[in-house]
Image 1 (tube, rainbow, N blue to C red):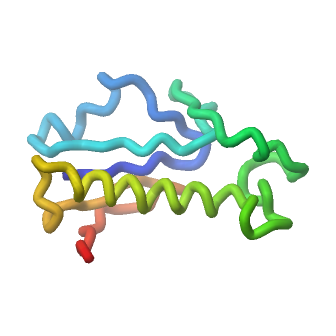
Image 2: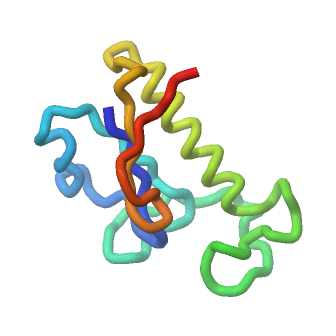
Length: 115
């Protein structure tokens, strides 16, 4: 199973644009990064309504004044939950889950070590 994270600004795209891993026979879960999706691929899952806090353009400083409102705190939790969901799926061997992505999404495949 491959859990893929999207690079900065990228959207999840359309289903037929993400067939690389499944073409090689792997189950594939793409985590849609909340609030992003403007960098050449469609797909934009909105962030929570309180996310429109003052910040400089981009996502790095969004919600920075507060620990509980910081944008990347929500993204990190989403990333962990995506792996947990993949590992919990009855058709997935949790000892054979890897994460992959580029830029904001990772850089190279990494094996997940189940708890």
